[in-house]
Image 1 (cartoon, helix red, strand yellow):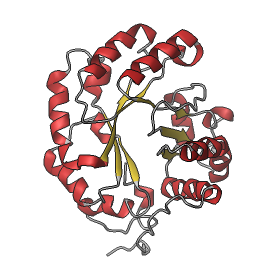
Image 2 (image 1 turned 90 degrees about the horizontal axis):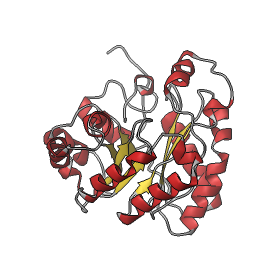
Image 3 (image 1 turned 60 degrees about the vertical axis):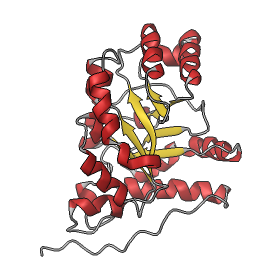
Image 4 (image 1 turned 90 degrees about the vertical axis):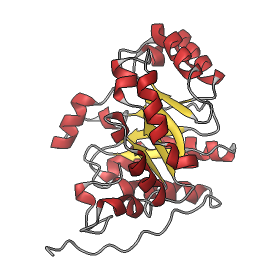
Length: 275
């Protein structure tokens, strides 16, 4: 996502044409989760617009369509994969990773299906898999089987860290909604490749979000010292302050590692107007 109603007039100018919103977002952050591709494959023209609005180093982590991962469960999905891969071609190297988010019911018994699916994908892309079945976080044999499957094709395992979010009961409508929808899974901080990806969910209170990401500062700085190139996405239930929080996380990493490239300076944003 690169636009949010509460960001208008704060992080993005308002009014702003749809074809300029990604460009404005890219002034705040240098990576984005492509969540809309889960629901519908965009046209090549739309994706070409995304490319025009971003630098070649900008990172898209694009979610595979739901019909592939949830409806067909990675089986007999060629007819849906081909148009998706064709549509995202204009991004070129900006397509940092294709994100395979699997349903909570996709468990250890389904790992051979995942292995076949990954082997059938074009090597031109990098792939990252997010699993939610509890066994992948509790059963060493399931962990090993998944890591070996991903390792054969140099695919990453995306951790979705919700531990800080579920530490205390919800206090807002957005938190209450997320409480019923987000997965409760243990923390995982291992990386399998040189390009790890982290999804972190904090709270609507920025102070609690910052406190919850403290363990990731050590992990991410360690990855950087090892020569890896991590991508970290910071979410909150309402996402009202997400761009600012992402920049704060980046700044805290740079405090430890000053050689890390700074983020771009956002364009000035004026106040909301009626005209």
